[in-house]
Amino acid sequence: MAAEERWVGVDDVAAHLGVAKDSVYRWIDERGLPAHRVGRLFRFKLSEIDEWVRQDNEREKTPNSVQSRPSSKTQTNRSTPKTRSRKRGGNE
Image (cartoon, rainbow, N blue to C red; front, side, top):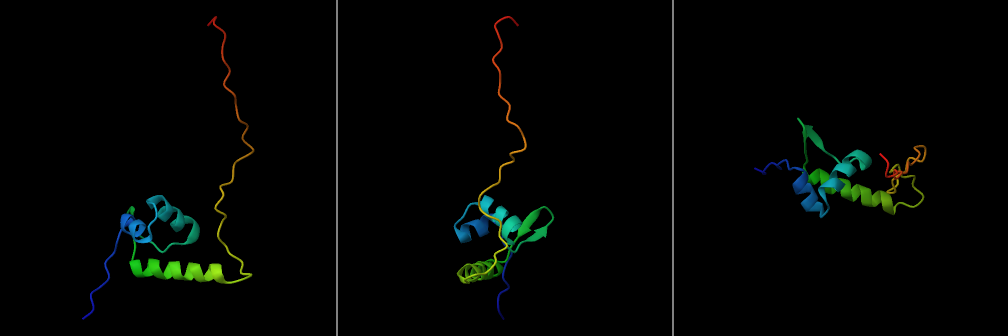
């Protein structure tokens, strides 16, 4: 009888992939990293993570493919004006 694969948390996935926990959370949101919510926590099967990495690598190797991933550069909000702090005179 085969042993059932256990569920792991974000710490285990980050260690398995050799990345920071923040990267795991970002990849869930932006790249579709397979994650399952259990209450407030994310749980993962390492076999699903490994398959996701393999598929992602295959997509990158495919020439002329349209990738739906957002760019890694963050966009700045240029519509919000930046304010300068003004020094006040000594007569306050």
